Length: 386
Image (cartoon, rainbow, N blue to C red; front, side, top):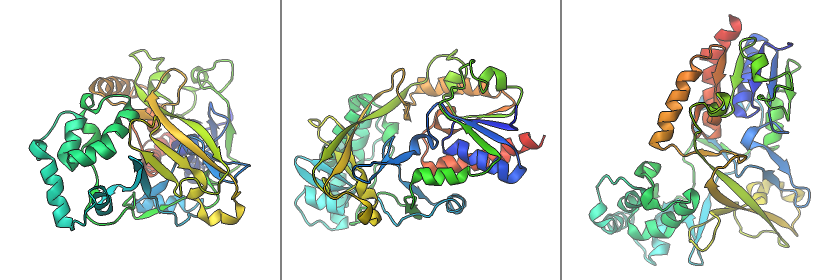
């Protein structure tokens, strides 16, 4: 077997580990992935008709306040000056998000000062103000008052979770951002942007080394191909980023996830929404948001088709067999089940579990990279040197 380390999964965790392994130890690394591309859920490709960069698994926006991560990713790509702003359509009117003084004054047809807006929202929380509710519905009202919650959060959340918010735990929204100024930047991180040449070019540069080889469309659990679990585990160090319950053949039960799926629309227009992401907070629109990809990259104006645009409508549901798992449901029962699986992972001395699926956790891209850098330093490098 011509590899010192096998990485299962070509997402950001696996790519970061592979890059660090060859750079710091000179190891030969083989990456396998069941998909036909690298990059995991951050993979993107060019739409030939419109010239837009399509994020195949939904909008991916890079942002971080971690200086170590920012320095690391800038080794492989330059970033644009894109800053994310979101808008939402409610009752036929468009409002800026997150909820800010502009949203509040537009919604109430008023001209509140920051202090007046704070008092109004506290008053609208009513008897729930300052309480510690157990369900999401009451938690939302306690944080931002009933009118704003019901307009912008309640129905959107119900569509996301396919569950009435009164039946969801309050922990899902421990806080809701409300800004008492006119700042509608979505993220508050120090650095933000999109990879100048696209996500896939960034990922290809990370593993552009003759000591790294890749096998795509390769299932770790398929014994008919050589890079399978039974042939590898115990013979070579393995970094596993697939579903942790699948690794153990679901012997303790299945962890629950939410998934998203998309319906594509194309329009004979240059620009359909005027922004990259438009949320829809009303229940009569079945999807949660629409993504117009060309608006992520205004700097590519001359490369785009201005007579056609592509939009993806995003829907949410509980994941079923065959669905892509996106967000852990994270009920108390799921957390308890994962803790049992985690005990099993600790009995696999030459296997490191990482990424969203391997640790049953939701991460932003910068968090995945940071966790991979830490895991390499603390677990993988010592294992390779030994």
